[in-house]
Image 1 (cartoon, rainbow, N blue to C red):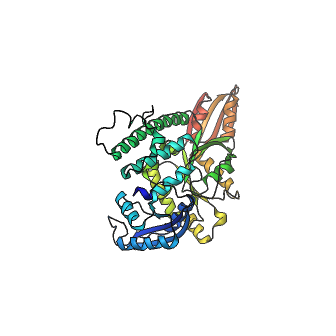
Image 2 (cartoon, rainbow, N blue to C red):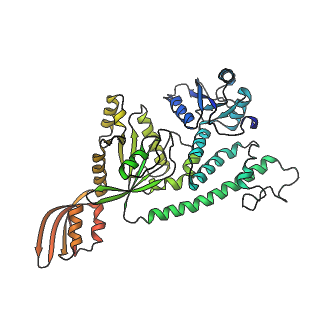
Image 3 (cartoon, rainbow, N blue to C red):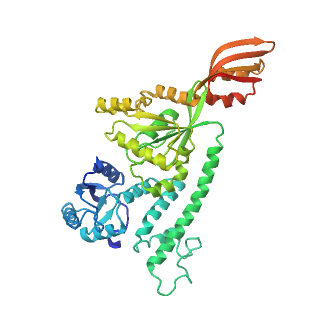
Length: 438
């Protein structure tokens, strides 16, 4: 098997894509998304092979006959790699490679490869490496000699001491040594990421009373573009899957004196590998701790509803599905069928339709977010010294004055204010605060 798998990279390679569907299962546009993933990884797609199967073959997934047909396609199109839109077992990959004579990657390996090419910061690189090692650990077949340069075989690091003098008993298999190398590297990476996780949590907690908003959504839904437009963040944007992996947080002025923190996150995907969700926990901490989630939806995509469902499943895995969520219907400027947009607007009447690219609907989005920021409106009565002008200024900036009376050096104000602004008002220490109606 290792002779076909010198590297898991697919950049510049000629690829055949395979989507195997169980009979009776709706595969939708599996090959469409797989094509986008393969091209994002840099592969040149030369053929697509969709096959319906009655059951999953434990040896080759698609059966010996179909595997032989696939081998003929590999020869005809001079392919370098075959990429499955399914997750395969180590045995299935090994048997397929013996039959078709080229490298075989499954969907999770492809996604991990894309993440590896996108990782720029130290944190992202550690997260991707951890996900790759955890995914590939059960698949070790003596193809991991390249880890010597990562773990520093014979070096002084915690991972590097493996395989040194005194550790190699007579007859010990190379595979066992490789597994020890990988295990120690996984432990080391987890330790480093725990430290990063702690620092990020302290950073989030240190943002005090600022209202925190997090952009979430399917990959390539337009989150980074929206962040740039709303905050002048100058975050890298490109029309490809997983263009950015690192969280970016910027201040967003909503108007009327309201200022919030807006964070971008890594894009979600249908059946995102669990190893990535686990290793990117520190990055996704922004979503877990947000006061409001903006779920960005690409309404120009025919599979928008399926993508919404996929994002919701990831949110459940992150235990933040019950966070306040505002749906943002993006890319209305390139919708091909108005009826599809109208259907989404009917299904999600509280959603806001926008185009981050053209600026359409951004004012309405700010108003909708401002309403969430303020919370339910309450009628309250505030008594304060006339010298405490901050109380009066706060109520005028964030609320609506209903009545105002000046009495012997004090002022009595009836005002409507968002419940979420009450803590800010209390910090200004009015003489008396009474909620009249909630």
